[in-house]
Amino acid sequence: MKKVSILLCMFFTMFIFASCSGNTETPEQATTNALNAVKSLNKQEAEKYFTYSDLIKENSSKEDLLENEETLKLMLKNLNFKILSSDVKNDSAVVKAEITSIDMKPILGEYISQAFSTAMSNAFVQDENNSEDDEMEQIFIDLLKNEDNKLLTSVVDVKLTKVEGVWKLDMDESLKDAIFGGLISSTEGFGGGNKLNEINNYIVGDLWNEGFCDIDSYLKIGKNSVGKTMDIDLTLTQLDESMSKKPEYDTYINGLEDEKYSNLKMIWGKLSSEIDRLYGLIKAKKPTANASDYEFDTGLFSQYLNAFSDEISKLDE
Image 1 (cartoon, rainbow, N blue to C red):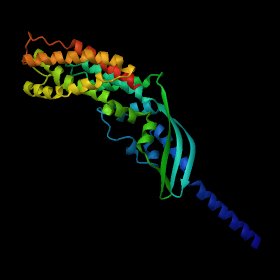
Image 2 (cartoon, rainbow, N blue to C red; image 1 turned 90 degrees about the vertical axis):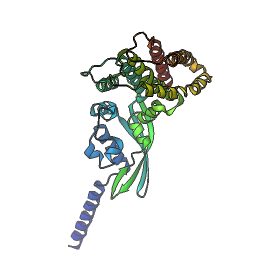
Image 3 (cartoon, rainbow, N blue to C red; image 1 turned 30 degrees about the horizontal axis):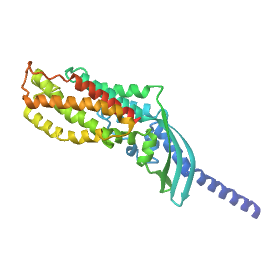
Image 4 (cartoon, rainbow, N blue to C red; image 1 turned 60 degrees about the vertical axis):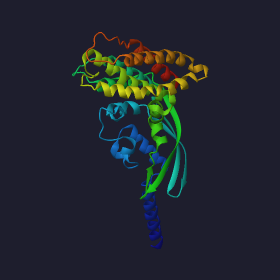
């Protein structure tokens, strides 16, 4: 009888131990399950391991292409990973993982180039039935669907902390960047993370969108480029301020010595001269509404700016 009791006790002890062990994920298992949840956009499952909004913002809008569910699915369709190793110390762990996803850098470069060309084409077209936001979104989706898109593989340290018996992932910048194929680091670069992109943004935004484009429209139709009332004096004052930055950018680009910048410098020489020419016309004679006799041709400016933006995209690849 005593032997039977001992055997039953051992059986129940082993059963309880096995049950408890079966409910406890290792850091490697938690990382695997979390990344699988990301790939399938399973918010409920992902929330077990990290705060979902830390990875993907909610309340998506058309203004942010990266928050659209269709684009997210396309960006994550090639997401794959391999667990390489793990290091566990009490309630902290680091899992080394190899993560492969679509390479976003060339896609963003091409998107910026196409989006800019679209914006330039639509500058004087007032079509209430055609949303520019929808056009931009479709450009991005089409680029993501390209079967020839490259993949990017990164090795990252996934940091985990045990909270109430559950391993939680730290969704830090390096992990997010790996999941989205270098999206974060690429966005920083295209958003002005280096001097050339800063200059490109300056030309597109300060000189074109808020300057020459609106002035050209004002001369033709008496309104800005989107058909709204325009204060020409304010626009000219802002343009003066923007032009005061140009000598710094001239000096920077002319000082680039590496041979890889030779084509960029050639294009900049043409673009810079055209900027000065257009600005000189404005300073010599103040633009007035509906001035059909005012010679203000922005064709060369647009051509040179497109070439300049394309060259920067090539250098970023």
